[in-house]
Picture 1 (tube, rainbow, N blue to C red):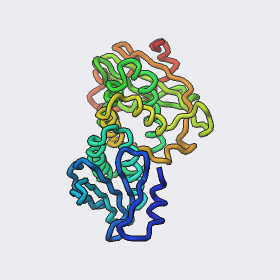
Picture 2: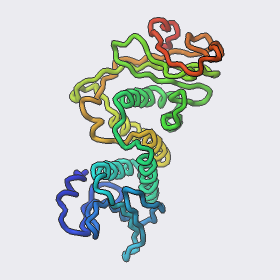
Picture 3: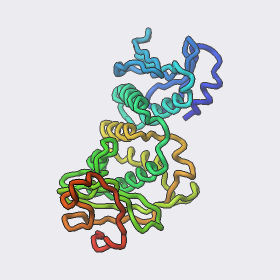
Picture 4: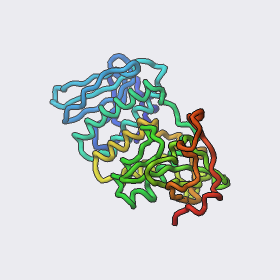
Length: 308
């Protein structure tokens, strides 16, 4: 894929565009519109989804003289240039996972709507280091364990990240709560009573991950896991759903997530059976004066609950 920011910087004529990726299923271009605004342009045989402009982006769509359809996104506030480049990059990368052109055309409109909502909710920045490490552990567990157990589509769509539910995965009659810690940690933090105090039995999963060099053959980063999971999903609809769930959470494949600061080696994974006798805080045992609690669990003390 051509560097989008570089393209914007090199075009010096109005109403001029350059295709971003010659092998992409969609005809996606970036350039300058007739009023000198940075623009992402889609040209398609199929009508795009109807979407409306935002404070940051002016949207136009219509039928061209050659009977094709166009959908353009133009930046109206230059203070958002860096964010607009990220938006353009994400549209190109995320739509590449859709294999049907008509669905991919509609996906671009849907993806824009998710971006508009995310930016309105102030989720346009990088995830925090804790969020990045936690999400990496959740995606690793999905890829390495849940997909084999339940099938890739069912497992991926059981992720609850954007819904902010107590457990990370809820599937069939069980659940999984994933904690990602460094290999030296002797405890895990439980952020709410409900995380482990659940009527149904489930599992506490502890992923041990340490920062490593980008040249480590065993290294993982969020973008790697995201792309691998997309290729594992069986069809366009499931890829679109999974990609949208992650965007709602605040993740899209930014190049920053491939830097050494966000590159990890997974050292170990342990699963612990959580049922009625598991040693955790239970709401039924708390005095009425305590409404919320977070606490730490010593991993050595729950070793007898570890599953093979």
